[in-house]
Image (cartoon, rainbow, N blue to C red; front, side, top):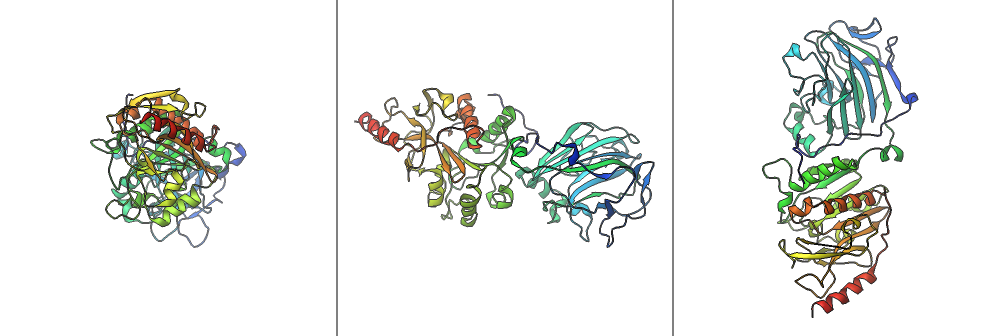
Length: 492
């Protein structure tokens, strides 16, 4: 598999679909005739400050004044507006703003409105027109010269954010993601603890001491119902932090992403099925207010709950919320790969959820093993046909619960050189409350992640986890008993 060259720090983002669609959903903020939707930012009354006026059907900044804010606050939205800037002009549209004693940009991200040549900026600079000011540059040149009208568009859905300029998507970001936090930490916004923290706020037109004009400003809410959710790519949080041994395929070496993170990112983009955010900082980012934005949480992790020398720093309180609230809700799922079972072995609620815990790997990374498919109808196991022979590190398990899981693939003890007198499951699924859980034991080696069959298995599993397709998850403990007998005979 040829890996795409990545252009951002952290995992890439797939385009957001599924915004509101009905024309009647639009709310007009300015149509050329009235400023009733607006007031002065921070003003005690609801009046429009002198210096903002209707001029030939446009909303014009005519002289030195204050910022202009919507009277109403908005949460998830799609905003459309047209803007024109004077030579050397500078302004901005700031959103999710909280009215404080500080300027609006201390709490809200900004869509930059600017005459790029007048500021000697390339269109792809971090503070050029269309950029997410000082954080995400516009990815392409879509601007028109000073004095000509540009069409702006902002989409904000949960933490997912897009800037559009003249029909081109020029910025895509995820508020609260690993990449977002790194950029904020390296910027002036890091000093403002309320920056981009609120789920709703005012729309603000910035006063920057330059002439600027706006027209055709309208906004509509983004639906949060199931149909809208189904129209967008799934959102996966991939956790690759290690409290214990760190596998080479999740180590971030010379690049900003590990091998596994790159493949999952590209797999999501190529399939159109999902987009991935990656984290190696669970202490900061595995939090309810961020996790609630995801459909699936994926672990390629190691570490314990109580051992300070190998601790994966997620608190017991957070894990209790994750396992017993978030994960049991409709529409949520958990995907564990390889060493996810080498995680929280000292915490029963976790290994009870995933189905078992790591108990050694007699079959090391260079072992050639044959894995047989037990259920060829399930989309997670179907890509492998009847069996697959490959090199990989295969785990055996403690706390194994055959009565709670459906085994889809097992180590074929009759065809594998190193024989053990017990069943070794490799891939299984289970229902968990209203949610679904899947664990894939393979995945130690980088070439396994590059294997098209392995990738198709993950895609099939993700479709099942998200309930886009259905398949049997009935526990099959009789299979475990049968495979135990086969293994005992093979090991004699």
